[in-house]
Amino acid sequence: MSKLLVVKAHPLSAEESRSVKALETFLASYKETNPSDEITVLDLYNDYMPEIDKDMLTGWNALRSGTAFEDLTGEQQKKIARFNELTEQFLATDKVVIANPMWNLNVPTRLKAWIDTINVAGKTFRYTEEGPKPLTEGKKALHIQSNGGFYEAQDVSSQYVKGILNFIGVNQVDQLFIEGIDHFPDRAEELLGTALTTATELGKTF
Image (tube, rainbow, N blue to C red; front, side):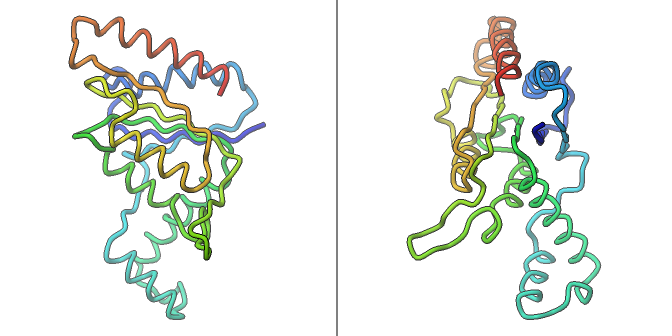
């Protein structure tokens, strides 16, 4: 049995979002193929997602200076505890699926906040004299992204997601793009159908 973490980085539903529709298509196929796997869905727009801010930075500095966690402010404790919980959730999983739109050539800000929780020195990578070394080898990931135009994995958004995952040791990163529908609306049904077929196939092999 494997543990699958699903990161839904879109505020809309499958009826309104192409990336979420592809995600749900993938999951239906995956569940049929892997009925005993443990699947956890992290909804970044409905679950609490702390961002690195003044509370987090001053709280971390205080902890490094020897302050007890219980002596931090309530907001510092809440944010740091949740940040750590998300890091541990990622460490405990075998596979991760990330689904997001590309907005203004980048990932949604909520996804960036989550990525910060998995790119943590001493937990998912470590510094050495030879440079940073990954600590999360053995995991694999699938990145699902909807793009209005055609980028063929050369966009900043998908390269950022893959780059971070590779940096921390996730070397197998499959990619599924729903591309070109805004550019060619007359081909919307064809382009979406092709992507959903690929999502189904990935669900059988991921």
